[in-house]
Image (cartoon, rainbow, N blue to C red; front, side, top):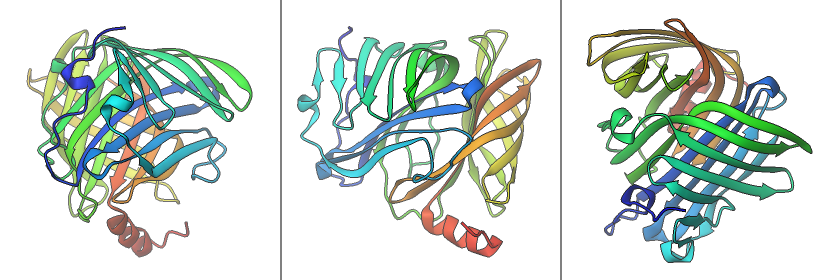
Length: 315
């Protein structure tokens, strides 16, 4: 294991009670329509942590019907030194992260009667090549998005499955208030290989199906570039989950990105008191590539509540 680098540690948090840090890893087993999220988060100035692990397939989309939901909001946090030693972070949420190479390679483990896994994430692009400030200061002060390959195994519902897929990881830190009621973010991505991928972080305006670029990247034929401008538009299913998405964007090299995504499965979860998330596992077509990825539609719960009631959603 490696010695932890600056990005792998908690950052100086000052005295702001809203300071927030999170790790997010996600992987798929497409033939089983299985998605797994690892999302531990920390509020060090309040002495609490939360998050955990959840998984879903095509047989349930809510916390009480999805395949696995081991997720809390207010677990006691005894500080960094209580969970980190050398290159290992043994988190109170039951997730263990071994830093093999800081910013490049991680082993992520979890063992629960309902779900267990042991996977390795190997980055296919450097952090510097794919990360940029989102300017969304109410949500991110620092943020990393990084594509990579996941390999290992997962045991779900008593069945052992091999994991071998491309997806992303992210790392976020900074003040995150729970009362930013106007927050509405779209997070869209797909990774076909180390040579072809895109990710787009967006913000919705008055039209809740239309999004404009905050940050993102395009990898085409192995050449990386940050996005310069772009927009996305989604359609919704009867339950208001993202059903499809069309993206048009241009990167800093002047290359055009046109991508179309179609939801395969979906789940809804309130990941924090101030954040509700629809996530749809999706198949994307962009350029000559076809790949799996996601359509994420993230709201403040108050904003989503008003939107859903106006649309007449039953659930």
